[in-house]
Image 1 (cartoon, helix red, strand yellow):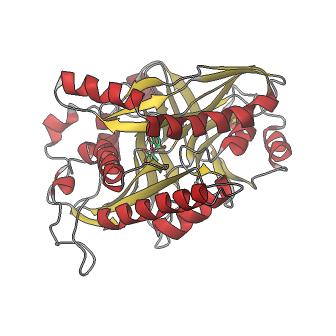
Image 2 (tube, rainbow, N blue to C red):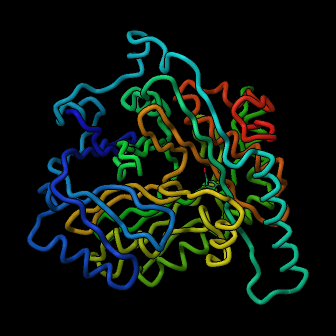
Length: 411
Ligand SMILES: C=C(O[C@H]1C=CC=C(C(=O)O)[C@@H]1O)C(=O)O
């Protein structure tokens, strides 16, 4: 196996696809179900031609571009998956054999700087307070603001080793997918370890497991538990979370004869973060509905955009100042039966040669503290930074080495 395969790996299953038969494009919206049906016409879910895989960008205005792979496998183990595609499975123990992950140093450019990010959070909350005070008809209730770190290494990034490290956390889904090449023609991949299920469909059952409301894990067990309990009691985080569950339930209910979810969220943990999460499960009225159609209607949820969506979207464009591209989109697969699984593309990086672009965001509501949201995004960066052996990037606070002129460098 030479090219990087498509990979979606969680505890029970490693879904892998390799080779490209063709690239398939769909415009979002009303015409999508018919286009998907036409694309799968005459194929069987069991044969690789009956499967599409890939990632979709955050921006709803962009077309969906997916791959029809040559070979698709669903394996019970990591090792079996790689073997089925003619390769050996990368292991974290490879580190002992091959030495340092990146020989040399990382060079980092934050975009925006953490200080600029915190100023944007303050502006977003000011908009919400203004709306509330003016009793606006459709007030801005939530917006998710993110920031990015552009890392450059002195050697090419070994994506196989990166994947082996990311999957050490059993609570996440490790993923990798090829992306369209960069403008200068370099091969590009999206690699990450996401904890969030956007939507899955299996037969008549649809499910989603949104996360919103977060705090970083603590080293000392008692502190960690206290942080989790404080998150569960936090009014700000509960509001942040409720907006997401409400929106997903609203969108899925017309498709469902029944839809179940708990009225209050549960704690969900990864190696680096605590989150509030709610599992939503429904029975579809029509089991022929495609997971791509469900993805199209549900994305972007307020876990990545906001409420009301159009206002949140334009505030994101105004305040973030960079293109999210595939960050806060989705990665997954769909077969000829419509079954499929789509995860939210967070805790991820776009990798091209020696470059890694990392992203992290946080939900902002009235009561959000800019410094707290800045710290939350720093904590979220840690998943990828640790796997890249680049943790020191966060420790280089205020070192003006690689920051834009005049800006303190504070990751
Ligand atoms: C946008 C991100 O997180 C979203 C998903 C989970 C929790 C979130 C939060 O607590 O703000 C965000 O809505 C990210 O991790 O980069």
